[in-house]
Image 1 (cartoon, rainbow, N blue to C red):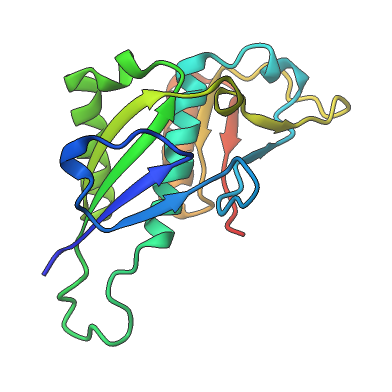
Image 2: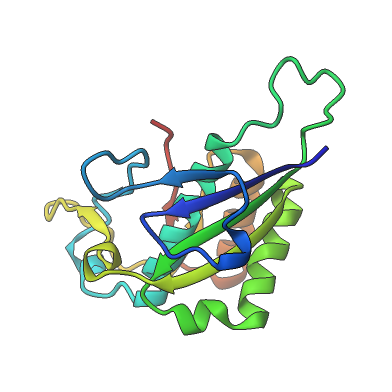
Amino acid sequence: MICEVLIRCDGASVPPSWRSLPRKDLRCLGARPNLNLHIESPSHRLLTSVQRRAADLVRIAAYVYGADQLVSRGGDADVHGDKWERDLALCVPVSDPDFWRNKEVRLRLEEVLRFLSGDRWTFDFSKATPEAEQLALGLDPLVSLGEPDGVYLFSGGLDSLCAVVEAVKKSRGRPLLIGHSSA
């Protein structure tokens, strides 16, 4: 039995065909947020160069992480793993919905997440409010990141370390490592 859940992110619109799904809400905005999307000190320079799609991708990643934490895989009572696989439908507000609605872009995102998690992911993208388009950056102008030439996701695990070492070996560049921590 597959667990099917609709995750509505920050008040995004929900397609009519999805309205019958059991629903959970993720909010990083408003009076009662349950997802903390705050980026700590990537430097003042980054503030001026974050492209809208890059900010959208950060937001999508945060919502995916939040959804993964929000929806159980069956818990200790599911000893046979019958509820391990989940079917997660996310309604996400983004600054560039036309780009993210593009079939090839959306399918690639869904395929990557399926490969990484074993779950089925489906997305619907709607236009974000101006408030939702802004990333909350905790800036420390005294911290210099130099001149990085690449940004790499870094979990702290051996697999992400190997990916960074391989990329640096090929390009002889200066990477900026980005990670996350759970609240």
